[in-house]
Structure formats: C-alpha cells, structure tokens
Amino acid sequence: MLAAHGTLSGLAVAPDVVAPAGPLRLPGPLGPAARQVGRGAQAALALTGPALATYTAALLANTAVPAWHEARRELPFVFAGSAACSAAAVGMLAAPPAEAGPARRLAVAGALLELVAERRMTDRLGMVGEPYRTGRPGLLMRASRVLAAAGAATALLAGRPRGARVASAIAGVALLGGAACVRFAVYGAGKVSATDPRYVVVPQRERLQREADRAASSR
Image 1 (cartoon, one colour):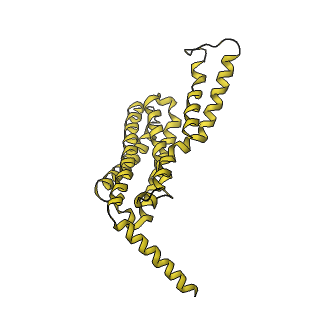
Image 2 (tube, rainbow, N blue to C red):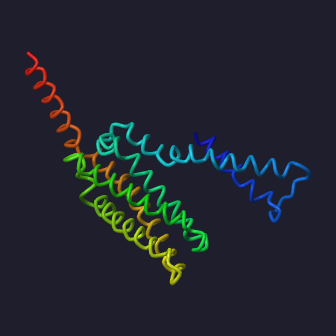
Image 3 (cartoon, one colour):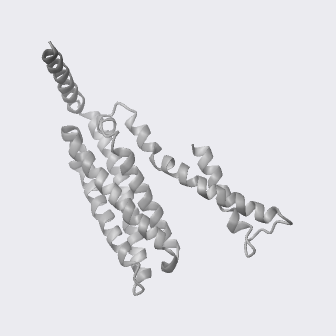
C-alpha cells in the first residue's frame, strides 16, 4: 500500500511538471500522454489515500494494548478525520483563499468525523477508555477537540473575502495542532493502559462473567 501510494503520488505531479508552463517539456505526444497518466494517478490516489490515513490505526488496534485494541472500531475513523484535517490545513495555508474552497470543505468534514468518532470511542470504552480522559493524554485529547472545532469554524469564515488569508492561516494552524494532539493522545493513552493491569484484568473478568451468564441461561 505504501509503495502504491508513493508511486501514484509521484506520477500525480506529471500534469504540472509537463504543462506548457512547467519545468519539463516532452517532445511529440509524450507530453499529453504524461498528463493523462498524471490525471489517472490522481484519481487512483482517492482509493489509496484512505488506506494510508488509517493503516496506523489498524496496526495499533492489532495489539494487546487495551486502550488501542478495544478502540479498534472507532480508531481508524479518528485517524481518518485527523488526516483529513491535516491535508486541509496544508491546502489552506498553501493555496490562495479563492482556490482553497475544497480544502475548507475537507477541513469541516474531517473535523466532524474526528470529533464524532473520538466521542463515540471514549464513551463506548468505559473504564478502558479512562486513559483517553485523564492525565496528559486526556489533556491532549481535550486540546485536540478545541483545536479541531476552532479550526473548522474558522475555515468557514475563511470563505468570506474580507480577512480570508488570515482566517485560512489561523484555521490551518489550529487544525494541524489538533491533529498532532490527537495522535499524541492516542499514543500516550496506550502507554498508560499497558502499564496498569486493571485495564487488562477487569475486562477479562467481565467477558468471562458474560460467557458464564450466557452458558447458564442456555441450560
């Protein structure tokens, strides 16, 4: 997946590189052919992009660390929203406000996905989700919510002509900060849950009790 996405990313710049005003001019039909290849690569990136944004969540969830493994249903969506916010932030910081409409829409969608998935994750996990709500990871998680919400709200304001450049810069910085906070929060919560046996023993006892209750009720 990494090899495919990296290769496609390189090919995707072909339309800009071999454009009439680009740095490379290919002779004959090679220029138009390269541009077609680049556009096809851009379309294919829509398929590999979500996998690239979420594979780290899958790797974390496929471990015995309680805060990561038990969050396997929502963690990929949290990472997808965070990645969307990061991409949108870079778009708003780099592109002129008049051309950053898609980035602003992606920022709002990514922030909503991240916030909803993170809230659902921490609520569903119960006791195992305590590391996401307390200590340094909890502080980072709360900071990520504030920054994501503020970045999305400011991105909406960046669509207005007046002060668009400043609003885009503020939104981009906030979204990048929120994305960093949520990643460090998830990492820190996993470390906390791995060092406290409560987060392993108590869920195991609860599962054994549920299995015993089901066995007793089926008799």
